[in-house]
Image 1 (tube, rainbow over the protein chains, first blue to last red):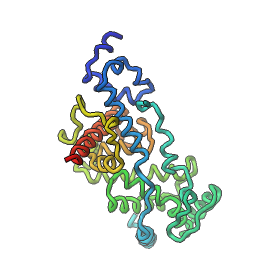
Image 2: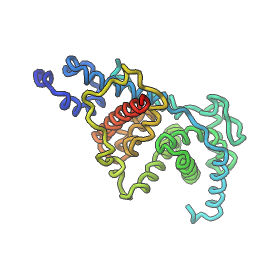
Image 3: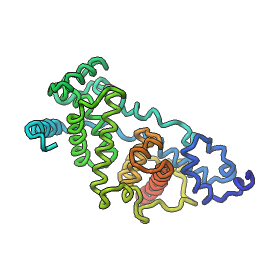
Image 4: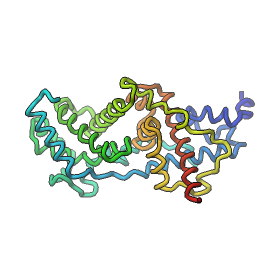
Length: 84
Length: 226
C-alpha cells in the first residue's frame, strides 16, 4: 500500500486532492508530495488563493435608496396581502 | 505552509455574521441609531415582531451591510445584489414572527439570504428545478490540467485585484461553493445541505473552483506581462 502511494503519479494524486483537502489528514505529509515539486507548488498556490480570498471582500454598504424600495414593497404587501 | 490545515470556521466571525455590525465602525444608514448591545437588539427584534416599523428599520440598519455584501459576493453583480438584498429583507419581514431565537438572528438572516440567492440562481438557470446546471459548468469552463504550471506563490502573483477579477469570472456554480466555503466559512456538509448535493460534490466543486482560479490568475498574469 505504502509503495503504491509512493509511486502514485501526479494525475492520481491530484484526482484524490478534493477529498484529501477536505479531510483532517495532513496533506503535507502525503508521500507523493515528498518527491514531487510540481504538486507541492500546486498545493501552495491553492492554499495561497484560499487564504487571499478570505481577506478579499470588504463589507459593502448598500445604496441608501434600497431601504426606500424595501419600505415601499412592505407597504404594498401590507396593503394587499395577496401580493406575498 | 498550511496546505489548508487551518479551519475555516471563523470566517463568519470575520465577516460579522455574529457581530452587531453597526457597532463595529460606527457607520449607520437609514438615520437609525445603532444598538449598543445584544440586549438592545433583542428588544428591537421584539418590537419589530410586534409590528413596529421603526424597529424593523433599525434591524435593517444593523444587518443591511452584511446581507448586501453576502449577496454581492455570491452573485458578483451590484444590481442583482441590490435586488436580492431587497428580497431577503422582504422575506425577513414576512417571516419575522417565525424567528424563535434558537440561533443568532444574524445567522438566521444569513441562511435566509443564502436561500434567496439560491432561489434566484435556480430561476436564472434554464433547468428550473435543479442547481445541477450551474453546479456543473460546460467543458470549456472547467479548469484544465495543472501539470507544469508556474508557481503563483513563488512568482508573487496573488494580487488582490487579479484574484477578485478571477473570482468574478468563475462559473456561477464554482463561485457559489467557493464563496460559501472559503469566504463565508461553511463546512462541506452545510454546503451539501444548502445546495442539495453530496458532500463529495461540494468538495469536488470547491477544488475545481480553486484550480480554475489558479489557471485564470496565471492567464491574467501573462496578459499583464504582454
